Length: 259
Image 1 (tube, one colour):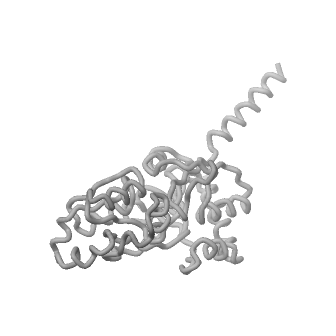
Image 2 (spheres, rainbow, N blue to C red; image 1 turned 180 degrees about the vertical axis):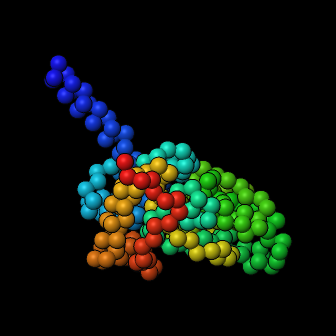
Image 3 (tube, rainbow, N blue to C red; image 1 turned 30 degrees about the horizontal axis):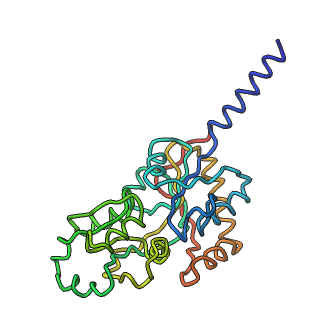
């Protein structure tokens, strides 16, 4: 009897630990996050793995479509998604730890067409633009005043559709444009920048209901790699032309109390 009770308690302990384990998602957004030979890779992935090594966390990183990862973040506790662009709306929905990178949100056109589009003046906002579904870049296009925003499942499909003439412009994070074009076998100069819409901070995002002590462990690990130079080394390896953001912020929804 005693052995049975001990076995039951042991099983419950394992179940409880599994139930509270952090589920980590990222997306295919090179060179920040992507999948290489079935394994997550990229600048932000390397940063996350370094934090994990400091805090003794072995949660796997799963590369999923953005829409799926974002839905999990908004609907389930104990989910971490990266990288997530900071916005006022998102600060009310999740806990954000970062910044892990700073990107420019750029409005792009086919090569040779930027001047023609800028010459439209306010009329440019009546021209169709593309962005990938559920992204902060789609939100940025709408906020800038574009009335027709076409949504596609991935940045690669968005870029292809613009280059095929389905719409005139594409809204994306500046430092992934070259990688997206490479994925679809297009040269970097196939597009040109029409305008920079905004500067965008990117974060690790924790869902509502994630225990506060878990978020603070990640915060401490992140602070440690920023303090000792590890973060800057990783950032400059992947993004040598950009300055690494060295501050630490924890913003948005307050983490849940420790259980």
